[in-house]
Amino acid sequence: MKKICLTVIGIYCMMLSAFSQSVDNDTAGYKNKKLTLDEVNLVSGYYNQNGDHSAVTGGIGTQKLNDVANIFDLQFAKWDHADNKYTLGIELGVDHHTAASQAFVSKSGASKAGGTRVYPSVNWQVEKSNGLTLGIGAALSEEYNYHSKSVNFEIGKTSKNKNTEINFKGQAFFDQVKLIEPSELIPNVTVTSGTTYTTASGNVITSGGEGHHRPNIPSSGRNTFSGALTLSQVVNKDFQLAFIAEGVAQNGYLSLPFHRVYFQGQDSAKIEHLPDTRFKLPLGVRLNYFLGDKIILRTYYRFYMDSWGITAHTASLEVPYKVSPFFSISPFYRYYTQTAAYYFAPYKEHQLTDTYYSSNYNYSNFNAQYFGINIKLTPKNGVFNIPAFNTLEIRYGHYLQTTGLQADNIGINLKFK
Amino acid sequence: MKKISFLIAAILSIAVSSCSTVKPYQKNKINDSEMSLNGRKVEKLESNFQSYREGASGANGGKVGGGCGCN
Image (cartoon, rainbow over all chains, first blue to last red; front, side):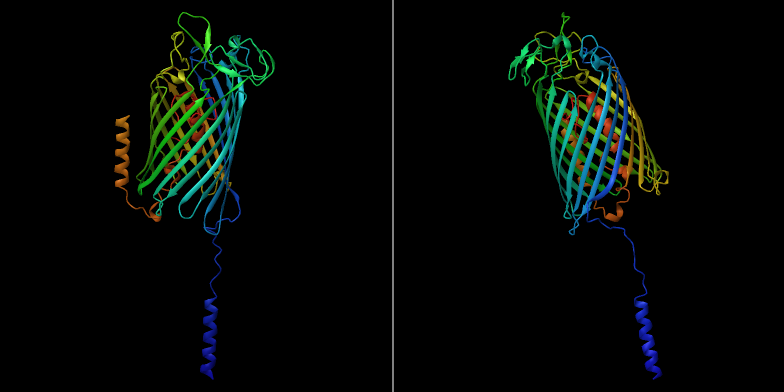
C-alpha cells in the first residue's frame, strides 16, 4: 500500500514538473498578417547656391537660388502564411524654390521668381520566401511649367544563401513641358485651336488654346525610358559590393523654353534648341568595407556617357566612424568631372549657322567637389528617449564647381518605427 | 570606354571569384546600417541637386532625366 501511494505521489509530481514551464511570450520574429505601418521617414532639406552663368540670361547673370524640400514617406508591411512579405510605400514630396534668374524670363525682370513642386508616389512590392521580388509603382510631379506622370516595375532574385541578389528596374516618364518663353521671344500670332505655328526658336508647336496672343500657353511632350540592372554580392563577412548598369532613352522636347542663347555679333537672343533624342549610359559600382570594428569605407564610382557628347566620372568616399553602436560620424568627399556637350558654347560664342545650341553651363566642361559630414543617432531607447523615434540623421555638404557655382546643402532625416 | 568596361569587368570577376559563403550568423557587420549598398534617405535631396547642376545622372537610384525640368 505504501509503495502504491509513493508511486502515485511520484507520478503526480512528475506530471506537475512537466507543466511547470511558463508560457514564453517572446514576440521576436512575429510577423503581421495585416498591412500595418512599419516605418515613417521625414526628410527635409535646405539648398542654397550662387554663380554667374544663368542659362535664363544666356550664360551670364546670377544663379542665386534657394530651395526648401520636404519628403514624407510611409512604409506598410505584412506577411502571409507562406512567409511572403508585402510592402506598400507611399511618399509625398513638396519643394519650394526661389531663383533670382527666373525673374528674367521677362526681359524686364518682372517674372515670378519662385515656384513649388509637389510629387506623390506609390509603390507595391512582394518579396517571396523563395527569393523572388516583384514590384510596381506610379508617380506624379507637378509644378507650374512641368507636369510628369511615371510608372515603374521591378523584378529581382536573391540566392538561397542570400549572398547574391540581381534586380532589374524599369521606369517610364511621360512629361509635358509648358512652353514659357522669354518675353521678347513669344511669337505675336493669333492662335485658334489646332493651329500649328513655329516659335522663335524654330520649334513647331500645335496649340490647344483659342483666342489671340496665346492665352493658353502650349506644352510639348518629353518621354524618358530607363532600365537599371543591379548585381549585389556579399564577398566576405567584412565586404560587399554592387554593380549598377542603367540605360536611358529620351525623346521629345529636351530643351528648356526659357533658356536664352546669344550669338557672335548679335544682340538679340534665340531660345535654346537641343536635339529631340538623347541616350545615356551610366555605369556605377559601390564597394563597402568594414575596416576593423569601428570604421567603414563606403565608396562609389560612376562612369557616364551620352549621345550629346558628355563623358563624366564621379568618385566618392565616405568613412563612417562608429563612436558607439548607436552614434556614428561620417565625413565624405565627392569628386566629379565632365566634358562639354557638343551643343554647348558660352555667351555670344555660338554661330548663327549652328543647328543646335545651348549656353546652359550644366552642359559645359567642368570639375566639381562636394564634401561634408553626416551624423547619425540610433539610440537603443529611441532618440530623446522616445521609443518610436528610431533614428535622427543630419547631413551637411559644400559644393564647388570650376564654373564658379557654389552651393550649401543641409538635410535631416527623422525615422520612426 | 573599352578601358573602363575592362576595369569594371576585372573588379567584378575578382570580387565574385574571391567570394566566400557567408552564413547568416556571420553577417553582423554586413547587416550594419552603415554598410547598406543603398544611398541614405537623407542623401536623396543632394542627389537631386547634383542631377540638376551636372550633365550626368543615373546608376545611383536618383533621377535619370524624367520627372523634372532637369538634365
